[in-house]
Image 1 (spheres, helix red, strand yellow):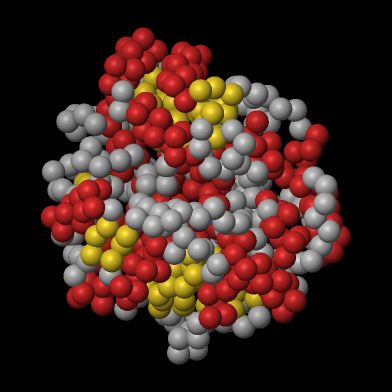
Image 2 (cartoon, helix red, strand yellow):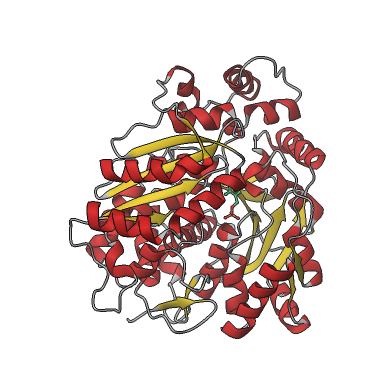
Length: 506
Ligand SMILES: *Cc1c(COP(=O)(O)O)cnc(C)c1O
């Protein structure tokens, strides 16, 4: 099959999936989409009883058709192996009358591992210099070019990207985080990262400063040429708008469904609702992709925190980023511009690139856009929404523990609150996606459960473990005694040189 990718804002590009992964973002600022998304369906009945890895090979084979079966085998084998705490990779568990899908059993205890364990495998099988070219090459690596992945992080993405790219052939990774603005656990997760190709550096500024500087480095043609000519290095991004981060997430929707069938909760063909703690809209968009591939998804519910820009959008049709920004207890959902929403709008408008282009232009220039009422109606036939403020998050953590004896983190708690707020639609089973281990946020969770939260985050972890008879993942508890490798703190205007030096060492 000849799936090609172009921008959500124009149809001029025709890239292979390899090239789209390598390039990340379309040159007009749009996101890569393919118009053949629902041409090949995945036969759900065949997945029941299969291990996660087999489901991944099946689903990824449809979404990334220019990768060979052997290549996908290698990628899946490397990404979903013993580094996961549960052999099911994303186990489904009952939660009262509903179900919870644990996405946090990977090496950094956050759902981003699902995508960032495999993205480096994809990336290692592409090359930068051919990605933007005229199509003379299919984007396969010729061996000598290397990729330096740059990421500015507010906490979770940086560590998951480091763990994924560490010691991956032909790649390097550089992570910048804002000094003093990430939690103690998050900082230690990054500064103790092992691997010969990893670089971690604190910067003096906030996350937005770091993010803007990274974007400026990507746009620096002079630096790009110097690194390419002198060192055979091209810069790339592990941001969640990359196709290579989106498609691995489609797999766990199929896995969840297969597990529901295995439990006897549904028969193949029955619709299921998914409730998804949402920030950049990548996780829930993957659920929509699953539906396009034939999964019986009955409803997709967006759960937001106090930064409820998506709730307002899905309620009124107006997306308005001009609003106060709240730093909440669910930092990975503190987002005002949900980038992946653009892909959903593309598909629901039947590929109207002109409309998408003008909406995104409005967002850029006026800070808001409004979609036609008919489009909103169509979106609302599938998407529902809710949100939780911080008191409700805390209450949800306590309620979930008291009602089910199951501990959830503050992000998942937004979804749990929304479950409680909304009625089950026509007796449809509901699956709450759990996006982080509660042990990543032991202080917030401890407070919600009324535990003593004096002392270090590690003391909080130990009290959480004994109060709930659960165990802290070793990757988090072991940080207390791990050696810190990276102590650099630099000014924002030194980031470009830091990237240059790191690239020359590759
Ligand atoms: C990134 C993240 C989210 C949000 O996922 P999106 O794909 O950005 O919507 C939710 N919870 C946690 C813990 C995360 O790390």
